[in-house]
Amino acid sequence: MALPVRIRRLLPAAALALTAVLAAAGCTRAVGATSATSTTSTGSAAPPALTTAQAQQAFHRYVTTTATAAKTNDGPLALSVVTGPQRSVVAAAIKSAGYAHRAVSLDRYVYGKPTFYLPEAGGYPRFFAASAPRDFPGTDPGDMYATWAGSAEAPLSGTALLLFEQAGAGASWQLASTTVLAFGAAMPPLAADGDGAIPTVPLSATTSGATALLAKPDVAGPLQAAVVDDGPASAASAAVAAGPLTTGMYRGARNHEQGLTPPAGDVYQWDLEGAGYPSFTFKTADGGALVFYAMCLESVVATPSDISKADPVKPGPRIAYPADLDPWIGAGHYRDSVQRQDLLTFAAIDPPAGAGKIHVIAVGGGLNFAAAT
Image (cartoon, rainbow, N blue to C red; front, top):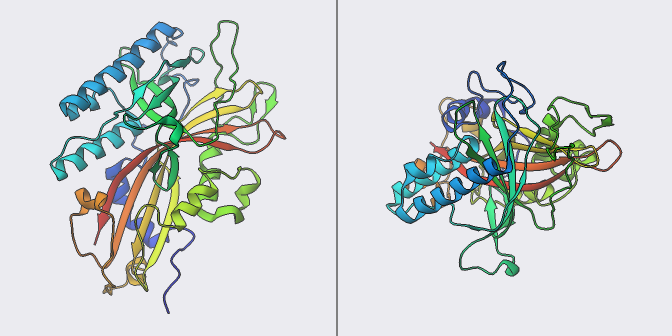
């Protein structure tokens, strides 16, 4: 009898086997990394408030530099304006292009006029966000073309949220992530102080000012992950709204949207987990929080003996996998396991207590790593 095609969580042995993979791919926390928002100072004097002109300059530098890199197939130039999750995703695209001896698939979107969201002054790393309409050349925005980030479906053209980060005084502003609003999602109204700057919310806070939050902002990702892993039956569904980036990702994983399908007798598993990159927040107008964060989606097809780390491992049937994994594992005939990792970025609304559920509204990122035996 064939084994079930899915186990709820990566089993301990499989999780341990992935440790080296995650360290190489950027999904384990590096020594000295921080998950604090820009409201937490590094000990030096807080930098002055960011101006719209400075944000505009950083946005323009990213767009023009990336456009040049795309036209000239210049991977190092593309990497010069990105950091964090975005840098990992761009580096993966460069690796993929080098393997296939083709042009690098960089950000080829055409961006419209941006709207900037500037936080109140705080410590480093500091950030700001921009929302802008974007179109993919050759498509009609009204035709609802879709793309996939991990097992999440997102509009190919639509409203993008670009998060920029500055690591320290004198460092250049770089793009840390790009997420696109999911079908039917909208940017929430944000709070503003007397100068027009937007307050931030500490990640571990239970309140936003005088308003109680549904959940601490730093658990928005884990709560989303519980629903992606276990579907509508998850207890976390009491706090997380159904949608394309929660229950939709669960269905996408079950339907093997990433191209990994277990042969008879093998096991298929997936797990959404934290990625170790900084998270950032804005206070919403109703007293909630808009949270930007990164997660890793781990997917594995393996034989039962590989999962249990039997000695010897009994190989199974040949495991089929999509061609986009070739740059990491080659065009091999693997019979023990095939693993893929997608580094994904999200934006989620953490509402005031009693005002509804957490809504995950935007997604970005893509394939980050793969391994096989």
